[in-house]
Image (cartoon, rainbow, N blue to C red; front, side, top):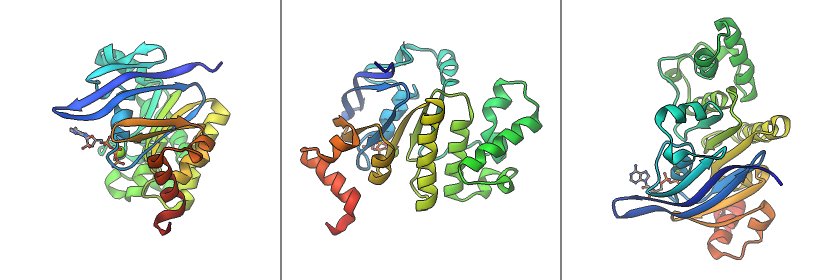
Length: 251
Ligand SMILES: Nc1ncnc2c1ncn2[C@@H]1O[C@H](COP(=O)(O)OP(=O)(O)OP(=O)(O)O)[C@@H](O)[C@H]1O
Ligand SMILES: [Mg+2]
């Protein structure tokens, strides 16, 4: 039996009267790629923010590596986050650091590796997201949106994270780069057994990389299953989303 690495239990989140996540229950297992799909505003990013302990639920629990992260202090969370990598939807790079310093941040902060070694490592990782040495010394403000996203992805995979969270890693990227990022997520699973949680509304990407998919709609997790199961879903909301995602608006 695979080991659970992340469990969400009876999670609710509301802002005032507005309930944005309703009774979410979910277990993610070691080494799987779990994709969260759903329309804009359905609650995907909010769910991810709870999974990394950035937001506290209104009620319910989130266990990561067996620890209830809703009860941890900021210091304890920081410790745990060394085992997690994450890419925010907005990219969120450190503007005052260069590209290589952003990518190598984990090593600069948490190891005694010489800077020249970290720079080399960072350049190796940048290659994995289709960027080369020529961007290493630029600042985030000098990059395009898609490049920022790839640098943020490089930073997320650079550390020693056992679980990596990606919020829309391929949105705004050209199809070739998008498939490359998909391939990267799969190879991290296959080579290193890394668990990934990927938020996307890219149906093709979801079906290509996912071991399991969770479909979220208006703050509710409507269905969880393998890509085959999701393709065969009888839930009309899921079906419509899948068909639109696969055949576009022509259908
Ligand atoms: N800080 C906040 N305060 C109040 N409501 C919020 C806050 N952040 C998000 N929401 C609400 O929560 C709901 C879900 O938002 P969320 O960002 O999780 O959606 P999403 O599925 O990631 O959408 P998208 O695909 O557009 O990124 C939305 O209705 C949004 O308005
Ligand atoms: Mg979002």
